[in-house]
Image (cartoon, rainbow, N blue to C red):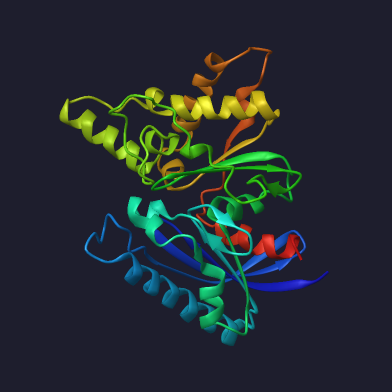
Length: 301
């Protein structure tokens, strides 16, 4: 059975994570890891997007060179919170750089990384796609939602993420779920998108508003749009496995899952679906995109 050492990156809106993962078949072993804050547009509004891009590339190149020298890693997988086209063109990065990020996109991230680390093979993919690959060895058909700073979603069918021929699909989180003119603003600049209604930032807004009124946040109300999205995928595609991951999921835990399950029966036709069995919380190790990114290299060889 072949082994492969992969240096993987999970570039999130709050943190940037890096790791060296040894993959052998359907098993993996963590050899090293590193974490640092992401210089996103909310934390550093005065920093130009180009400066943040250079800092990000420096971080990737420095750790990749370390992984190559220390562990003999020859493959890089970098996962980003935005749509990725073809061999590594990132089409948007609103979670990191806000609505103005489109001025820099599309960005040939694979090419930029390759310029700095020319001896290594470079793969670039969406962060939720990377996370999903961790679960492919268990089941080829499922949907994974990641609730962190923003909201991510990917549907996997036959072990592959469904994003369309041009990498622009599979972004239900940027579909309008609230049509009011004063609906919450999404990181991408749109209003009322699913990701603006159900995410770590949306939950913090709800918590803050509830505290001002001396109330508890309405968890059942918060999860209704997410339950609607899960029902859409079940009724349209027949999916029966929905995985919840990310920092907000780890923070709220089982009450979040139970709230979603409670809202699901009202979303459509009742044919005795076992919603409780369909919705699950992923292991709370914050490693899904790192491990999945390594598996993606192995599975797609």
